[in-house]
Image 1 (cartoon, rainbow, N blue to C red):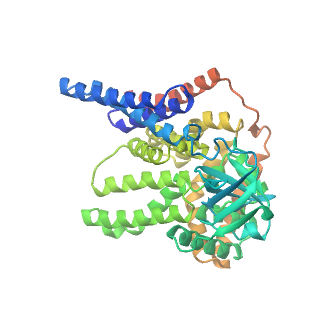
Image 2 (tube, rainbow, N blue to C red):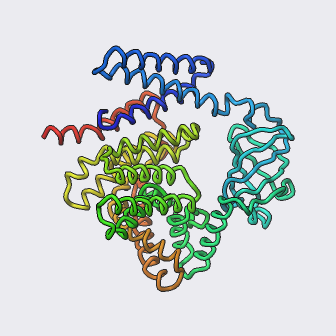
Image 3 (cartoon, one colour):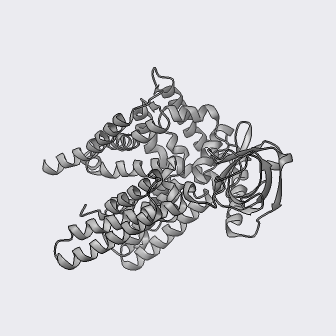
Length: 469
């Protein structure tokens, strides 16, 4: 706690948000009073106990919990009268603005949007649109405003409409986000027209542009059942590799202050440019934010705990968008990195890269196990086999994919296709092993609590043992 005090602050913020989301009977005034009492207690404790900061720190945590509750009460749809799901008629006219480029599915296009109005009344909130596959849906872009008529599903926050039930009222072609998205689509079309085999090009597109619309369904299932589907999501692994690559290219800058500033500035520009280009997914933003904090601390020549940086990234993201706390991708992203960071002493204890790769994979899988079982009710048993072989190759795979993105020709497609063929063969073999996936895992609340406690002990105990050894 002394090395990473922001971890306690982040947990207090999340606790307040969870309480505000689930305890409907607590009014907004309760969280205001809790925040005030926490701040008052922290101030009094700091005044009375000059050298003993624990009472003041506890008061600070109470204050943070109250702030978390306030933020959730303001943003939570169930408490927001202006949210479109509240008192929504069965059939409505919806005005929405798309926040991403439509993603092709098997029978439709899926696109996320923000609600502008319901039956001409101003409303807010996110909605997922499912549009019938046709030329109208295929031509939509990020930032387009639509007027549609249909039957929304308020429980799932979605609506399915055909092309004769919506029109494009305004197109966005001048904003920075629209221009970035246009650049992203231009690069995507270049990759799609390249010589790389279609199913392998889908993996390269996912790793470099965050575009999952061209991933081969069979290959996606094989990746999922072998436990390496995280390679298809732009996350900490990809951002970390990119930051290391940029840092390596600026080796000549040296370790002096000017060199650190030059190298760090280049890393920040590339990381956030990459995050923008890949669609600003929560996992990408978390990774870019965490590495940005690390780069800034390196520029200032200050040693900071990685767990502290992860907690700081969580606090910033939740303060901006509290409902991210319930986003499964966000949860998996943070818990996986937290598990790896907690296991760092064990990872460093092994000198062999094979054991290090295995330890990283085990730590990430252990940390995410409660979320995976509670959400997806399934677990790949042979994740270790695929991760130990493929994760060390991820840097080469990302580098070749970026090279193919820049120059989509036969010369760059050949080594990338060869490596992806190897990955495809391995994942296909692992996914067909007996009992490759355990299905229908439905633990009770008490069993889930026991699982969470066991996971925490398994991640923390080894480093305690190493410290005392």
